[in-house]
Length: 374
Ligand SMILES: NC(=O)c1ccc[n+]([C@@H]2O[C@H](COP(=O)([O-])OP(=O)(O)OC[C@H]3O[C@@H](n4cnc5c(N)ncnc54)[C@H](OP(=O)(O)O)[C@@H]3O)[C@@H](O)[C@H]2O)c1
Image 1 (cartoon, rainbow, N blue to C red):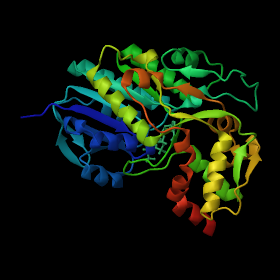
Image 2 (image 1 turned 120 degrees about the horizontal axis):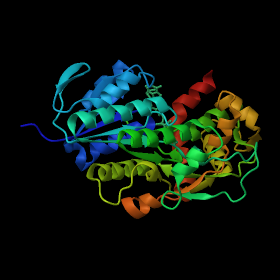
Image 3 (image 1 turned 90 degrees about the vertical axis):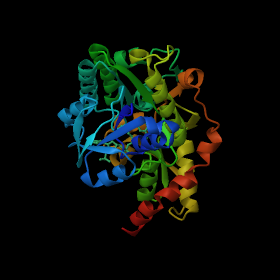
Image 4 (image 1 turned 60 degrees about the vertical axis):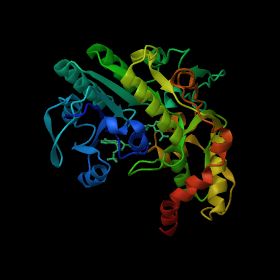
């Protein structure tokens, strides 16, 4: 007898977010009802996924649009070539693609959605797309343009995030991709959902990458300079969320997507924030300074202000606008949908964020100590 399973395809499963989503699904009671596959570009990683009961599909990368489309459009109940074996996929009812590879690669997101549309057409079964964006979509330019004085706090229930992204005067990859995801989903009849995480902290639980981006990048910059740095005044405010809490959010959203309750919006109304509080960039830099000083990686816990230009040269290949949006802007949001509809919440607050830096620096010790030897 063929068991009826939901097929899940994760793109970005070797990464921090995608790997943690995979682990959350695997450890959930739902796992026995899921047939999970991942798109990967390095063949040597297939064995690890195989040991987790996860099938690997090879592709050349996100620009391999045919592979993205094909992976999402596989017919269920028919043998498909899964590398390195031929595996008979379970006769699943639905497929959910979870994309956590790149928030700003619009063409691969489109190809995945087109593949899902093809699958829906060929099988009559439902297909859904969960995309990962980031709250830099809300970021302002406090140092290079007139700072917005109100620092609006965006609600994913009360505000029209899609319209804001669509009408935004500044071209920015993550907003372009969000809009593309919604529009292609609407045009081909595939329901889409976009998760918009802020600064993610804490160790990931996936099989490969376990470090986040912003805090590790600032720690690397501190190591290189010999002291922690903050861009300009560091007064601007962002949200944060622990990776474990974000994983739970994805699991809850995944369940809702699978079950399709009447209250679940999709498309333009389904752009969701996930946060557990707010910090300033100066608090981040001071946390890094204190942790790296304590562990002997820095000789001082003083935080130095650096210009946007200097930071951009070190972190974003000279792209000042990107450095400002992603490491110095105001970006404020509330996870109202998660709290009010999904039943998601967390007891972690600002205190947890401010005391996590020791653990983050400890996790980076092998890398940061190596830098020291160079
Ligand atoms: N971390 C955060 O705080 C945060 C917050 C909000 C939004 N985001 C966004 O979420 C996305 C994922 O973030 P992350 O922290 O999980 O990043 P990550 O650890 O670098 O993981 C990225 C994943 O996507 C894959 N990938 C990236 N580019 C690819 C390409 N061109 N072709 C094929 N595979 C590719 C990587 O595969 P390989 O292992 O083969 O490289 C990896 O599996 C990023 O766009 C990021 O900007 C991150």
